[in-house]
Image (cartoon, rainbow, N blue to C red; front, side):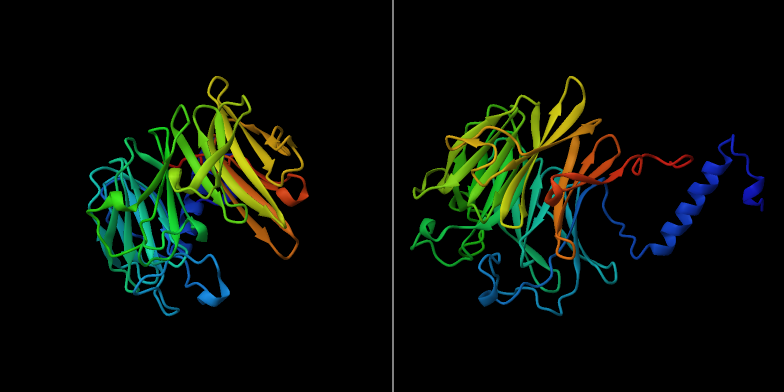
Length: 372
């Protein structure tokens, strides 16, 4: 075995050696190796931990006859282009259940916060709602088939009390929103009533129409009661609750076109008592992205009740921003926004400090020298 000092820095020897060391380190930290899908794994999602008792929460997701208990095993859901969803035990790696039924590739997963329901999106233009028991067994309770294009994103949120139908039967009072390539978003009530996969129409509440190209993403802010939809038509729309039953109880209050390219992601973020909307815009011509932050408080960036300017903007993305996530940390009061980009980088900004760049993880996700 050659010593490190004997390796040539001018050749690829060091790179190959480093790749082997990194591979060995990765094996040391590997807890589970889950094998079973027949194609690309497109999404992974852990079942959330058990919620607080209902008296301590006003926004816990719909309950089920068998909600997860504190002793429930950890469950990892995986979606694959092989058309299936698999549920795995997070302790042992044992396959608990294979969810079949989609007629095309499965692209996205979303758990309800109580872990009792799992939503899967597929290229077959449907979303399926699965009821998952404590032991990991599952059954399809709804097939949502109103879209004429594939679903691109989903969000679960609490239904306003005034919008509830007194004769609508039992349920947790939660709605599901889905966006699609058919230029619409749809609102569903899939958690109410008895399980009946064959009656999707009964679960549909309304259709949010108006975008001129595919709706790429959506998100809901529970404190404001606002729904945001992002679209490839270079705009994002804000929808607010109203007392009527049309359009799922929502009305479009404004459309924002900032001329920065297709809006492919949107995310509401709470910073203390302030609510922000983060949007990412992709310029196809120059293959670069901008991330804009909008103050939803009605003061900064607003005029005559309309959103006219962003509060912060982040540049320097050499590709499409593919994912956004944010987390608040009580220790120092920071609210960190992470943005992943197709150029292999991740940038992290502190929204509580006027968008200071905390980390710029350049090249961290680019292929290592000598790796496959």
